[in-house]
Length: 41
Image (cartoon, rainbow, N blue to C red):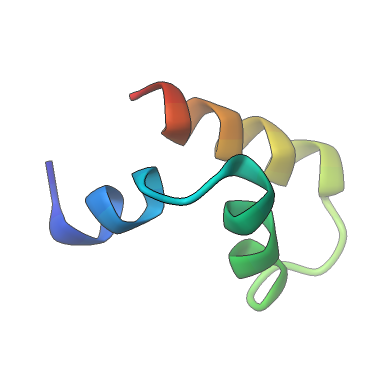
C-alpha cells in the first residue's frame, strides 16, 4: 500500500471528505463513497 493511501486510511471518513473538499468541488456523495471505501481497505 502506498504511503499516501496509508495516511488516508488512518483518517476517519469525515476527515477524508474534508481533505477531498480541498481539491474537488461538489460531488459530495462521491467523496463520501470514496472515503468509506478507503477506510475499508
